Image (cartoon, rainbow over all chains, first blue to last red; front, top):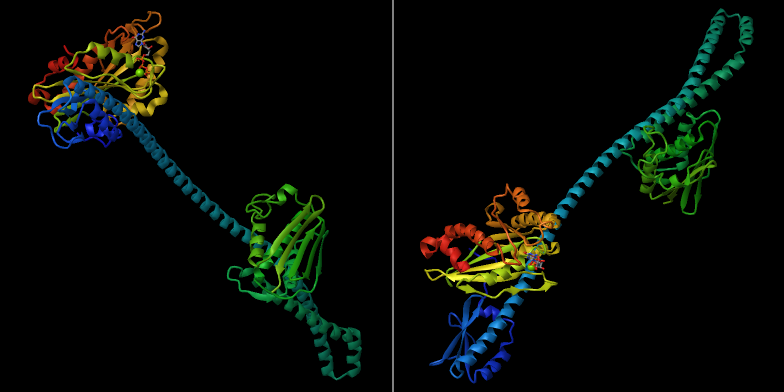
Length: 399
Length: 217
Ligand SMILES: Nc1nc2c(ncn2[C@@H]2O[C@H](COP(=O)(O)OP(=O)(O)OP(=O)(O)O)[C@@H](O)[C@H]2O)c(=O)[nH]1
Ligand SMILES: [Mg+2]
């Protein structure tokens, strides 16, 4: 059976019990008591204290501890009684020493035990915290996935709104181009009849017919119609070109643009969706061109405009202002709608924060806006008063 | 498990008195010191106490020489019963070869007995001993107290009927049942000792002479 090192209840030998005793001071005391030189040796003959050479004919007394002799005290000079008394005193000292060692080692054992159980609980806590960390990571992943999905939904929602706006924008020119072409068809009919008369060679009849058909006006109007239609076709071309700014957000390239164009475009898109009693006012100041991702900024402006429109419900006014102030471009989009309560104002840029119905796809709108603006080195701020309206201010650095 | 020291020709055993606070563990040891007359008997070493309550342990060394010339040494320990000293209790219990569980017969102490016994079971496992193989005697102490105050023997026998351990009724204060308890423990300890060290075959010590040598007949 092997013992663990230094258990408090181990068997002590003489050497161990003597450690910690002031042996240097004991030696002269024993010499005095024993009336001369002495030897303190272990049971197996090792010298612990006293004279190095053994005595020729010593008196010898066992030093016992617990039940057994641990060593011997030898003297040539002392009588038996003195020697026994000295040995008895040594035994008492060894007993005290044993008490001390046992108490000390028991203490160490319990402390180590506490330490071991501390380690054990520490390990448990570590495992627990790792598990928690893993769970948090998982949670974060879930949230991120949800966020991505929401972002996607958000994009789809704005694409839907965009599509509605664009349809309206295109419908208008297409409408008048269609009606112009209808009129042009009539004019061509009138011209055909005149051409037929001209072939008869009757100039007087031709002239009467010309007057009757008011061909002077027709020719003038015809030219105007074509001009207007060409303009309309150009507008459609422009809209389609602008649309690219929205459609290629993911692989966007930087361009140098006048942000007023973007504001106008976003306003046009919004205008198609506004109720009759909602007024949209543009107060655009001259701006220096800046390098940006126009498609992304279109999204920001459209998002802010849609927010404003939603705040207004049936009637009110949306104002879009722009100005160059110092080394910044400042854009303000305000409405005089319901406003945002102060306690919500701090949170409106937080992801998933929405005061509107779930599923209306606006939970991430302002978060995305802020991200885009910050990616351009800009700032977005909001001021609002319940019942008075809301103003979003977007600042971009110039250059 | 007992320590086997070939160099010094010595076998050392550790026996532990366990139980709730104030049940009479220290008193058992003091009575044993008086009652037993083995070949070799040391003094009781009492570590620290506080109002008579053990803070570390008490230790009584006993021993005898085998016909083969070996020293068989038994170290009897008591643990501190107070709940707070569990770490000490565990350290003292470590490496035990046998245990006496000293229960307090007073009715009011039933819950403490149960708790201490459960604590013994837990600590036995914690220090890596096998509870089912551990020699154990259960002693119900303080039988000298008025009957109204203590559980009757019938009640106790009934409660412990299913338990495999010897049950001894005692009054350590008077000295009754103390030696009997110890003998019952020695009888359980002997077989394992004989198996490990061939006490009978090599050292010429059978169970009866083992008990007689330790107790002094
Ligand atoms: N009446 C009666 N009193 C006893 C008996 N045995 C012990 N006592 C008393 O109970 C008290 C506690 O005894 P101890 O032996 O110190 O108890 P312990 O189990 O060592 O207690 P801890 O060291 O605190 O765990 C003392 O006052 C003893 O005199 C007994 O058999 N009968
Ligand atoms: Mg005690």
